[in-house]
Image (cartoon, rainbow, N blue to C red; front, side):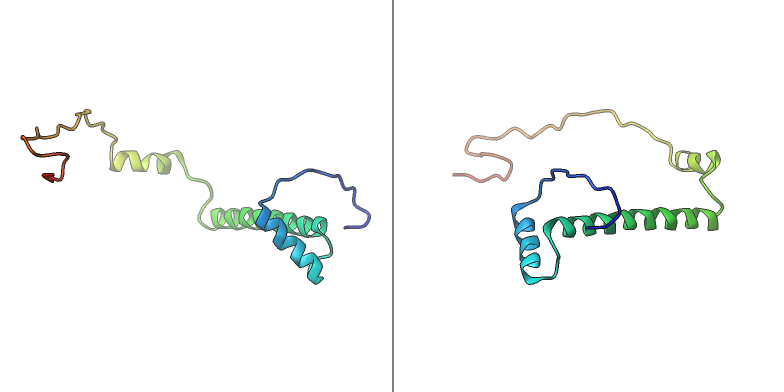
Length: 106
């Protein structure tokens, strides 16, 4: 537990196998408690999200920023969208003794 920080209790749902693994870590002394393990996992996940955000911001800064309207419309100019008419698939009629599409005669 982090001292000096306001904490709140929440209810979470974990897979049974995950909870068993966490409890094994607590018993082995690798984690202080189930709560401490979850707090650490949340902190790592939040840092990860922040790191990806910072990396994206840096990449955008290095490459000239967000896409312009012209850049956003480029895919539509190179390959215009066209819709093909819907045609239901027609299966050949089966002759006597055939069943299904594979032609198996049983």
